[in-house]
Image 1 (cartoon, rainbow, N blue to C red):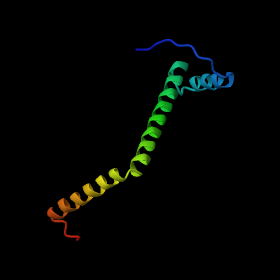
Image 2: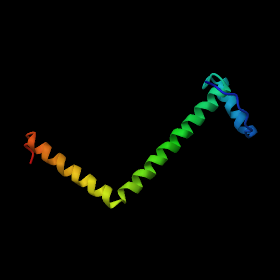
Image 3: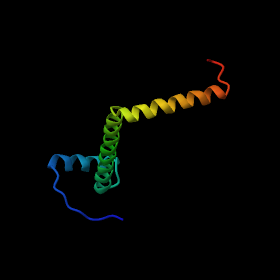
Image 4: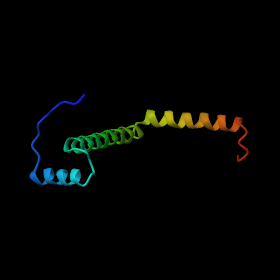
Amino acid sequence: MAQKVTYQLDTEIVAAIRRAVEAGQAHTMSEFVEDAVRARIAELRREEIRTSVREAVRDPLFRADVEEISREFEAIDWEGGDDDR
């Protein structure tokens, strides 16, 4: 559900949005802004995930779990008839 909100944007940004709409890159200014905000939110979420992964790989317990799981999968792969060993 859409909600009407009001923000102040730099005049040059508004002009660029208008040009994009006039060029057919978005149906409306609201659509253009919403798409841009969605993209930024997705970018921030990806950065949060990257930060979490960087922190996890520094955690000795996490690294030990990953190594244990890797060893378990090696055994499963071998049992499956992997002849490359």
